Image (cartoon, rainbow, N blue to C red; front, top):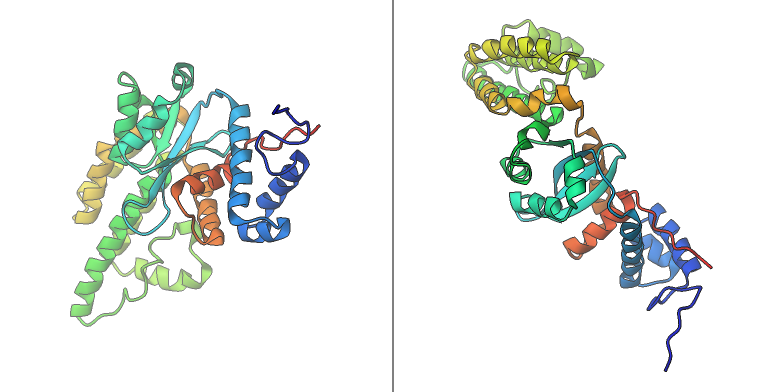
Length: 324
């Protein structure tokens, strides 16, 4: 028996190259369930078409250098173990890798599989304030790892948003004991930024703000720290931080005070923003699209298939076969 390479199909493939190219178009524009009905293939055959396309795309990508990357965790199911780490190319807005877990070892594994040249060309890593991710970067670059870390603005503001909500809950309980329901149903009002507050809340919000509430002071502190990222010069950003930190730690609002000290412990990564000027906005956008993918697919059999689906849709890969 002699095996020969056919010009219209890849080795061990069940479909021609022309059909695979058409199948990629269908799978990109609809769900797997709808695609398999259009293509008249099984679930496994549809997955293997995606797997072959991703393998082809990763092979073509080669050892590409990425100056700035984003690292974010994504919940893919119930429980603490159902998390993956999504590594994104912030410049192109694409997913570079999907790693099982959210531990320090998970991210270290990704960095170790890069070539020395690829590791050397990484200038900045945008992330949340996860100690696991911080540890992975510091172990990979022992000398200047901290200089590469940029804590994402969204996650920094989330610390203050949570502090405002804690102040609101404490004050709400105290007001209820005093017979006042002033803060009832106001949870989401205080989490909005001033310019994003819907018009339907304006009248109530301004009445609350003028009512001399602790929650209003906590909200004012949250809004004031947002100005930090508007500065063009890190020198003036330092001045703003010092003034804000003194205000927050002397506000007599314990949740805000704790959040202020948390930010102080991670200040190096916040101030690195003025060196690299990056955020995890692209990664957060990809996360929301991954959530839509999970919902549309009604889950995945295992995380290996999830990885293939994410890279297929959001990897920015050249997946189409070269036909004869």
